[in-house]
Length: 335
Image (cartoon, rainbow, N blue to C red; front, side, top):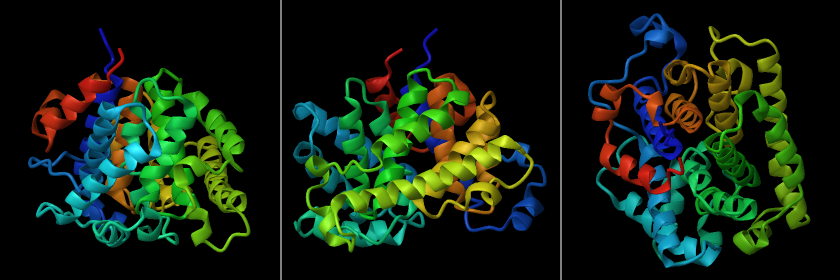
């Protein structure tokens, strides 16, 4: 029996997104009034997704288009990314509480200016990495290509160095899990990766983006982002040293409105419940933070690890964009 890790990742992301949609912006007490036990949080009967899944599909379509044209590179990827992001910005379905950074940057992208002039170099919102999972699923990419593509897709809207690093780290996590890395090995591998990348500015992919910030060099620019990620990995390690699935995960690693915290808290929910993907998504969605983004990341990680069989068939049947999610997953499934 095959795992179908790519399909599992995309379905898990959308399922988590739809489950977290009703709880986003709500404090824990308000969530508990409707659903006292987080382990019983339901997927809504109308399993509608938010901008998280919409933009994930935009990234996935852009990657598919770029790869149809030849080997992946910044020039080949930037154009379809721009087109997909502007199409999303213009879409009448873009009414799912989208992030303001994404909206403003995509509006600027439409007029043809260089993306380095369109992005928001001061924003490290979670929009940078809630959509990056498809990059980690692509077969045949080198580690450098995966890093460059992950950072570029973030950079078109969120130019802050932490947004780039967190996007890279998120894609790398999906890549590891989809290729069979054991969950318990992740914290050490992610720290090693962050340390190795700490001073690596991918100029081939990012161009002169760093010149828009106030850092003395491109190296110091990207180091600032990786240091934020290393700090949140410290918090993740502390939470895993005394694991507690019954406590709001946002208290340990942050509410997820910013990219590095969305990564760490989504990953924490998965690592607290690595053998129960449905519970991991529920734990992330039943939280005080950016519940849909946290749950979509937890679902992506759980789906990458467990594969398509992680998710109840009745949930898959009613998730919005089901057919496109399945088609893209089938395109990149390797097992």
